[in-house]
Length: 640
Image (cartoon, rainbow, N blue to C red):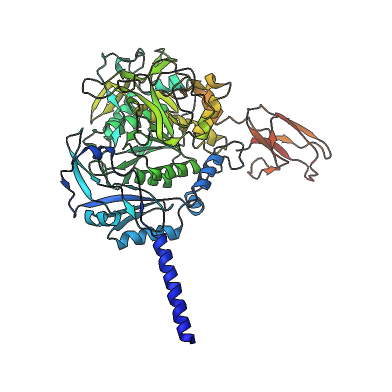
């Protein structure tokens, strides 16, 4: 065979191999969880117009999910060298995000198939695209059908089958393919004379309702912490009326209010959303300023696509870029399908030292699939209570029961109105929850149980709806921002002591609750239930953890000090004469390590570590360190 023929043969063989390899790499695969369960029981009434333009948020799998999960655990483990050593967004992208090549492959794939890329993100986890229905049907091999909604007076669209792609990289989820479930706020209102789960109204608001300092007096009495220097973020699908907020702040006597910063995501939101009239957004802000009146700013992350198709993932991506905000609250629920893209974004929040609190909902015990994101194990789930205080002048905490207004469906045919909780049908039990016995509470030893904690969700007095004021407000949506604002107090103390922010709280909270000091750190809620007609035996409040109120509510500064231990006053002492020793003493704080430092000038910050880290001791004797200067100053500092 001559040389030219050999070359041609080799080229053909190699080309054939590459073609086969490319075909295998780009074999079409399916993405589950995009067809609402209700579709199986419905007949379509038409097909979505092929020219209609849809907005999608496509999630790409992280580079190494096992390594990602391992780091999330290490950064929350006090015994790990990585404890509270958080990453920047750029570091996350380079270490755990999808590769640049994979992201570019997705971008090229979208453009080649007729979609327009509308936004890219630093972490390369989400790609926002837009395009006509005809292109979306083609790229994902679906038909976009229109159905009559079974419980609401509207139509909705959804794919007829699960989407699939022939792409050589792994996708997690495509948000926006259906609008069966719109984000809904997690609050309720009732007349003040209607019966409920108990608890006399002893707050300082009109009618004995609760507002302002009532929450601080009950949950963190005597604290001087106000959230000073801290920022708090809220997830919203509507706007608020500024006059409602200023009226509330004036009514509670707040003169130096936090700055309100609106971050628009996708489309600007309005107050006149068809589901709400600024009620949820106003209530979230008002709860936050009540618990943490000294906040520097409240960032309101708004997506105004509620009527068409909003994207939780776009808001979560926006949150990740605001590393100056350390605590967030979400009081909105979405579909009953899990979103694995959101889980990656929640884990990145934990890696960055951000705390995220979600209201579990107001419909009692969950049966079957859980409303997103109420069962996510990567954020802190918050249930609700009815709190009773001792009234004027100090409004001390007296007791709490599970928040429950109705047992069984109410007059409108809905299910119960009470603190939501349950067992995930999607997520396994997280490692930090395995040290809690589920024998007496009806929980699971193998699946994620929720909520994690709780706070008051009853008898709240608000200013809403462009000038309306009044009480009777309830819902876990008020409990979640109270916890976010409480965490601002914790992070204020941590910052003042030179510590890192507390980040994802669940590992630490469950570790504290499993110790002997549990009842000094949490109010254990042992009375009440969130049962209803569809779940008559689940769930009931019990001693310890339960699926109504989790570990309970925050018990004053005890919990703050456990999460961000106060630092003893530094000791400044001159060095003894050359060749001598010096003994330092300080007040011991449990589970804290110390570092001895020295300096020759107290006015500078150039402190130098001397020797190894000190643990489990409140005294240390230093040998002569062979310093030649006539004077040195020593101090003992807590190791972050």
